Length: 257
Ligand SMILES: [Zn+2]
Image 1 (cartoon, protein in one colour):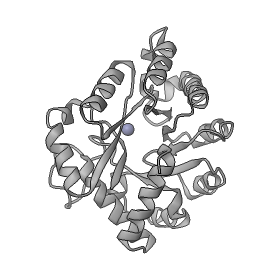
Image 2: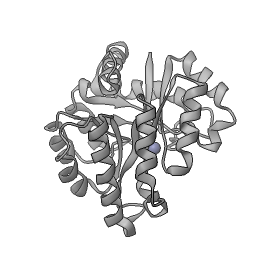
Image 3: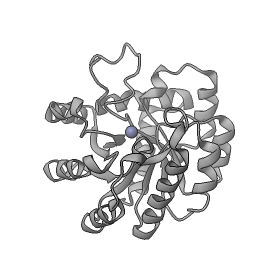
């Protein structure tokens, strides 16, 4: 079965409807959910969701938008959680020069600190990068031993070529590709081997403008199937063949077979 490799089920837009949202996803074959925290205030909620619904895989991180809201002992809290929860991943962390230019030095500092923790505790990492690949790539280049996914990938073909040389880095496409009709996206998806691709929705964010999506209130994990079909179409692959490959990729990334 498929895993939505990056979503935020703790978000209040989804939380009220969570049992129905999970059921709807399971009906279309999406039955695991990598749920990413974004700042200290939602980490516990993400862990609680994992307790209640074991198919929700927890991840905690400080998102670049929240680097100026951290507490003085965030590092200790972060490490404690990782030590107590062996299945907990790291994310969402990263760099954002599009929405949050002002704090870029702090963003780099907090990203680096979290990547070092990821290396020490051997946890896969989910990275957000908007308009900042020129800063991100030299940083992640120093972490060849950390499994990294570039979530909701938005980089250019040139960036993809550099990433493909980094064997520990995998590229994740979100529902954002459903509303993107740029020709370059076709070239980008085609150049990436199927074993270097992950799929996600980033729910409840990134609700695309697509007639295929009936729930217009928020994005949700059942829409992952539309991303799978779209990537298969771009790659000119059978959906079933791609689905099997993506399941293998998910297992490799999360360290499970
Ligand atoms: Zn996200």
